[in-house]
Length: 360
Image 1: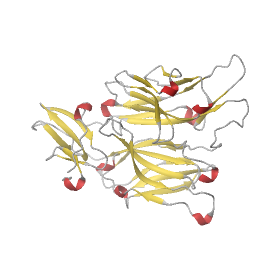
Image 2: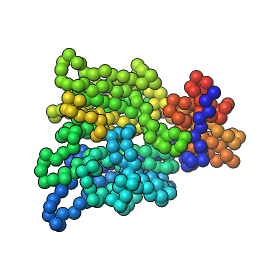
Image 3: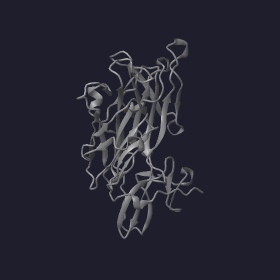
Image 4: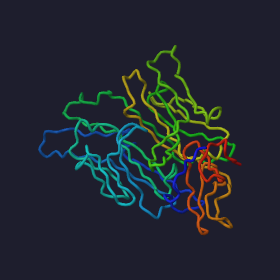
């Protein structure tokens, strides 16, 4: 019997309303997803660049959010700066003395003494610790090039191609059993590698970096009609319900890898991420995978957790079997999510395999 339970004490009190975090990196749209800093021999040149970041949390949280800046491709990154809700600050040794965030309300990352090895994708992540689940965590990225000479040929080894996506971030509300269509615009064309993820979910050690693959299409090595569009793989959880719909964009190399999910279930609610990479025939790799997210909500009047008349203990969320809440002295704590793929078993007071749990 599996007994995997996330500590309720780490979850703040709230009931009913879901607080949604939304992150915006303003320079994405203004610069087609990337910025660069060019070395200059001019003695007045300042080796400094800013990566701007803005966010909203609605409804607002009573506590300050955790601000994290990461570097690398989506789902495979390292933390370079973290300003915890508690006030603690962590800086990666490689960036010690070179990165800073002056304001938690506008968490722009300032990078000084930049060098060629700093090129890559930088992510601004904001986590509402009062709701540290898929709804409470969002992030966006910007690709940074550092040109160490005054000449244009000094670019990263991957060449001039890079990943860039734009997702319609308007929350999608759908009734149980209905259909959700998530809109995404990507670069790289239909030959690119495409993945839709769901997450992040949290592990028992408190790290919220686990992303569940919903559907993916493999990249095509070269533009050859015999190779076809690539292989599409669907997670068993979404088998027969998830599909990709490709439509060519209005510009060369742009397309729309929209995700459609039918027969929506309570466990489908959460945050979905569209990510792609340019085709392999561009001599590309996955080092710059971009991503944006959209939230899916169940548009039903589902029953909400309540401690009225209940003894102290933990209970399954009546609107979502994969979540649970705790009652103590009439106070409600949670809900909190089980690990991905598990349901809460009230009889055993643990998160358990779905086939061991009664779920309405």
